[in-house]
Structures are given as structure tokens and as C-alpha cells.
Length: 277
Image (cartoon, rainbow, N blue to C red; front, side):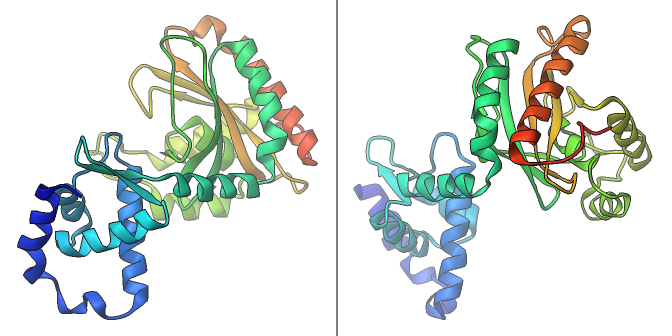
């Protein structure tokens, strides 16, 4: 630890709340908040910035960080004076990905799909109104779309999310809309529930879902669900790339490749039904 960080700890030591030592559960929650915050940072965070982000005194944050560091969940970079996620966090996250049985079934087809389309292929699972990327095969193109594993996109505005919504019951969709739908028309990310319902019906009819620059400007995605034996979506597989390559002229052919790959994964996974139809 460099002098600057040690000094920050010393300066803030007296501001620590008395409840800091009151029970291990609170410390665990705080440590997990630190991991969540570091996971969202591309360049790492200084002690001061991290403590501010999680709402802790630097002294408290530093104690938790050093504990996490001993178990290799975080690491400190002396040159940049920043904290980053450590290798053990990757090990645990990778164990989660392995626990989702669909990943080993999907990966060979994801590689084939990337070779055929030239675009990044992602595998998502639903969680609390979001779609979480759990596996990826990156495009070899210089300009490519990357939603790193562990990243999330909204179910309502992403191709993967809409593909999974289209395999849910209407009551479940309404519950998600009620809990997570943005209804304020002034919001840039607002989702009109009636338009989303109509789009989900269109997804069911054509067999694939689209994201036309809804998640990010210039990005287009095509997705299909991966179904279990009951015909419910356990995951969604998508290709993502710049709209200059995923053009209207190529859309039907690319969608056909994605649908075929999704159906192949569903069969290997032991799932039922054909696509979303």
C-alpha cells in the first residue's frame, strides 16, 4: 500500500460509524458491494473513489479490501494506485457459468456461428429484469460489438431479452413490465408497454428478436431463445455487430443462421419445440 492510500485511511479512521463492527453479515454485504463496484469499473478505482462509491469511510473500505486481497478476490496495482477485481472472482464467476448446463452445449455452435456470420456471439440468461451475458465468442473484425461476460442488458430493450420474453407466459411478462418497465416518456430509455407487447408477439411469429440501436447507437443484434424440455427459455443466443454490417439486406440471411444455431443448441440441450413458433 502506498503512502497516499495509507494516509487516506489514517485521515478517515475517526469517521467510521460505530456499527462497522456490528456483525459479520453487514461486513459481507459491504464486501460484496465493493466487488460489484469494482466489476463495473474498466480501469480500476482508487481507495478514495471506491469508498465514496460504496458509501464507506476509506478506513472501513481498506480493511475489507485487504481481506478480499488475501483471498485474491481483489488486487492492488501500486503503479496506478487502483484496486481491481482479482483472479478468484473470475474463478467463482466461471463456476457459475459452468453450473448453467447450457454453456457447454452452446459453445461449439457459438463458435460455428461466429465463423459463419463474422460477428460476436453472446449467450445470455435472465435475472431480475436483466439479461446477463455468461459466455461469448468474439468477432475477429477490427470493429466489433463486445458485451463482456458478466455484463447486463435490459430484457425490454435487448434482442436477447425480447427473445426470452417471447417464451414466457403473458402473466410473467406483465409482472416483469410492472416491476422493471420504464413508463416515463421523458426518459431516453423509456419503453412503451403496449409497443413492447406487440413486438413480443412479432418475435413469436417470426422466430427471432431484434435490437435496432436500442441498447447502443450503431449496434444491431439478432437473438433466439435456447429452450428447455418444457419449451421455456433458459437462455438466449445472439449475434451483435455494427449496423453497417448487419444491414437490412443481410438481415434475413443472418437471422436464418442464428435461428438454425439456436435450434441446434436447443436440441443438444434436450429442449423442445422449434424456435419460437
